[in-house]
Image 1 (cartoon, rainbow, N blue to C red):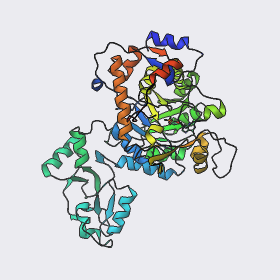
Image 2 (cartoon, protein in one colour; image 1 turned 90 degrees about the vertical axis):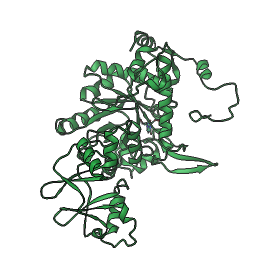
Image 3 (cartoon, helix red, strand yellow; image 1 turned 180 degrees about the vertical axis):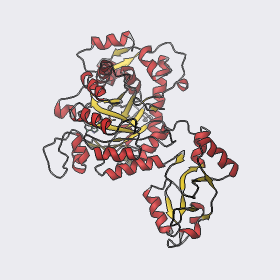
Image 4 (cartoon, rainbow, N blue to C red; image 1 turned 60 degrees about the vertical axis):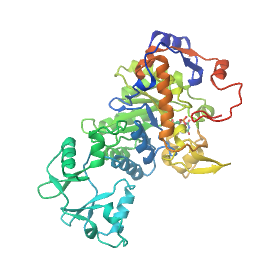
Length: 505
Ligand code: XMP
């Protein structure tokens, strides 16, 4: 961060500033928006292609949002659903959406029927259309593809009557490039790998292998096995959940509650690291939420790989109103950045969570010290979000609610715990709501708000001549905006005749 910005924050030591309170100057630039590199670090070991993550909320992120977010270059954080199996299932669905090598392909026995096949495919969310067929000794005997089964009119028909018998297999190991060459030469869309006794050891799918090898989908955020990456909120002291999520190779655990510096949070981070050592398990931990340097320092010292910042900035939050606690976001990010420096545990990234209203807030978050932003409301009104869709006065809306709202806390144990309750959703233990139940306009697929946010960010970087997110901190200076300046920033003294795709009245 340059000297100007350090002095700016020193001068505003006792002010709590948020996005609308600041603006930044334009600078000499040799950078056009399309030349910017907006990749960033989510956490100590995980990189993102765009600096945007979706919020772990029950009206924002289940598996559909998680899949699309990873495809767009970000990542989705699955909300802490009380039913652990369901949350684990969302991880599976995200991981099964595409693969380099499928380590444990789903199989069906040749004596089962097409009704069983449908049930199996439904269970995994229709994310694949071919199944390896095995006999009672688990030997590979066929491949069942949609090409054939679509002609069946009886669900009682046996799998063996519709499968491709003795499909081409490869005995032994093949890396990604080897699989690509083998499949291309033999023109097979599925490559089944077997051991010497013809037992299944893995499978490659041409579509996925080709995408990776030919670089067709450069924005997808993939793990080392070519699968989409995903995060999940695990709350505090829930080791059973942690174990099951790590067993399914969830990439990032989020120890996330409203008050991230309650002793349970650093304790949980330490406990996870001890019980699931990083030399045996492959994951990063994000901890939060905090809003000042002392808190960020404590979480860094506990071993967090990223810190989530934000107490009360969210669109549906009433924490500051109901409890008086919290610091507006620009100051909270900067102070947390100081906490990371003070911890001396390396450059641990900050995720600025909540309060993003426009794309112009993204550069401001990064100049203040964040590496990525977490978003709820702007991603909730999409096809992928789990929120209920409804029509009101001719306009389509999607329900969006705070995890500390009365509705969310009554519905879900995890949500109540997050806001300090005992977690027994059936009894009231006087946990006061800290969030609202609301709705946001339906905007179509998630790609739309993402492309608006990314476009605005890139244009902001062009104005200051920054090629990378990090460069922004050095190349521009923050200024404090007065109420008159804020008014000037928005459309004024005209009658707006049409909402813009990225600006509504
Ligand atoms: P946005 O502004 O993107 O904010 O809608 C999403 C973030 O808001 C936080 N959150 C809450 N905060 N009460 C709060 O004080 C709540 O009920 C609540 N629910 C979510 C959360 O950090 C989320 O990512």
